[in-house]
Length: 633
Image (cartoon, rainbow, N blue to C red):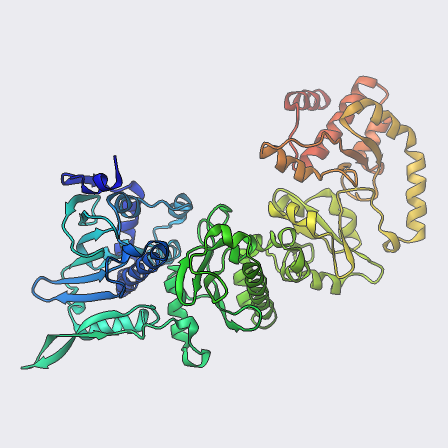
């Protein structure tokens, strides 16, 4: 079937059910966001603006889409008698399929997480809804029926969508002379405040002054004590690109509202940077750091939040090449004069100009974060709680800025012994003992596993601070971040522990003596365990536990090996090293055991306990239980 035939195909009026998540979202929104009704107009105007941007972009390669009308605008009108408010745009419009996809469903990653996070508390849920982004659905806060009529640019048939927001909607073919979308809000009882010229214009100037195309209403005048519309049009907003204006001409409120427009967030951002770069490359950037993480932040396939403009003309949304993955939470716009108007994603991938813009914008954001960390520590704590794990992807992804990113990272440590990540590497170095020359850390599957690891015993005894790393991304981070300010990062669970000058000569002599005395026991345990271990040796790490497992210096850590296996990855078959504490009662009991079978059972129990203590999984739980029962009985 040809495109034209498809466009002229007649569809009977049909009723369709909302996706279950849409029904749930509508009910939550109507009740939770009712106190913030003005956002309805902001969201619908923002969508209309996006539709105009998309038309401009498609028309670069197909001028016929303008249909002889290239003057893009948004028109707002109200009808007191019918009690309706109408938002009309001459943007790209939607096809029948696009209406169903965009309005009947929420095709948004993070939907499940969003609904799981809802608490039933209206105030808290209102923030979550704002964080999720609701756009068109906000119309039902003030309307008990919404009628949407839309025709896609270049199509001949329009479609009308209508719903009372209670679980279903109707779709039918319609006639529409002009392209674009018209939304009619049939107001609920008690919402007559929106049937006022003054009220609507006040809302537009407050929330949508920055929209780059004209928002037009009919002029009104007072006649016989009543407000009467005239036939004369009036542009209500400034209709100029906010980012192109001088900083001195932009108020703080305008910056905040523009953020809400580009991000569809309800809350103010934590920080922003507005800069104009001139010289070899010329571009303007207005970039924001949100206060809350979106629900799909950890979906690395989702697009980023930067809008690309060329000479004020919108080119593409979510231009992923303008910001590195580890800064994918950044929102905003970049407007350049150095790219062709018909720029494609392929050109973006191979453009030196884009690389230069990306490098400059990345440095800007890292600079804002450094300033926040130094001068607004409370704001930085909020930022790090939301985005810290994403920032940890940076050193492995952005070698040029590795040191800058490392300086922004925060970790939990044995100093506070809480799971709050607030220790910077600079803080750690400043507190290092005079003889200490490395930064010690441990990785584990959970904070509790890291905090209670037997590997920490000698470090706690000597009051040596250790970073406690339990985020999944930490193993990836440590593959790239091996030193900071000349200090090597060293795992306390890998390789042979050498505390260097942190141990006295006397302590080292005692250790040598213990090793000599335990040689026979070590050899016997090694023979019992066979190929379960790479080696058995006397520990220098333990003071209270009988044994622990250590990875060889060049092997994967036990935690990383388990993570990779859980993800279905093949890992090298590296055996752990068992370290024993000859001073512990259980090891002394082992040493005194004469019966070979019992000795072997005890040796395996020692190994299995050490494996469990570091968060590992037993290969043969039944044999472990059998041995334990045998020894206990």
